[in-house]
Length: 336
Image (cartoon, rainbow, N blue to C red; front, side, top):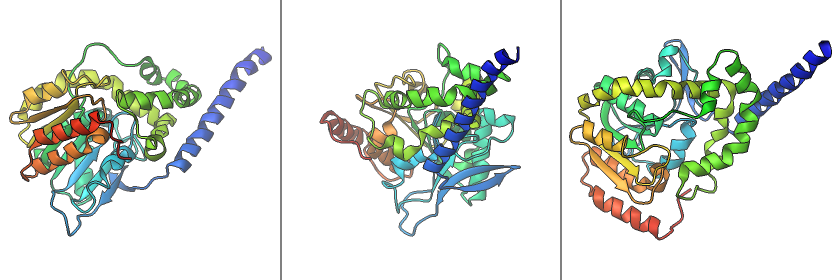
């Protein structure tokens, strides 16, 4: 009997040790570049760029999507917007180097509350909120529940409305008591490393992924057990949350621009982006031909034009879309 038990436990212990070792490696490869702030007893992480003397835009708050961290939006926007605004790049609760906090942070509204409190900590009274993918649900929650903090909203391939179907199987397993604990520490790291290349390619499909995307944005950080569990919990709670909360988007009054690709295979634009355009009075929907789930990287110029427009700077957004489509159809390289 002892031999049989050992034959089961030894490989499990070895796998747990391997996952712990790899988690430390991930953190060594992508150390925290942000600063932690206490938010009601837990710590939120963010990179805060103070307002420069040359600023011509209001403060900007960037919210990353599922399986991500603040490095993703930094890679898209930090350099193009350098010198133009105060910026706050946030690790959502439980992601990157932010702690998870309480059970309310399993929902976009709870994460929106946390970001609003973090803004106060950083002295940001009001900002344009930029949300990519899952971050779009949180940006919408800020628009509904914290209008006093929301100078405008920029949605990038947002996930904001109920959809038919479900989510990937491994998110369900990861949230089952005990089984999920084992799964996150035995299976997730080797499975995730095996799939990392393909998953990141799929996120950009049908467009090419920037060659240095993985080495710059730290997607492997989501494979750490606690982070993976938080990410899985976000996913399994999202659909029911959106069913209940999306009807309240009609309350949003902040200037709003929605940017989506017409070839997004991750988040269906006809449900989410078009749904937002329908629900938010006066919002502007920009659809870019041939772009998938990453308009933040593929059409950064359009996103910046949208920020300018929200801030009251005259910009022809349709012309910006045409320029981006012409550039992309010509096969121009993606900015790294």
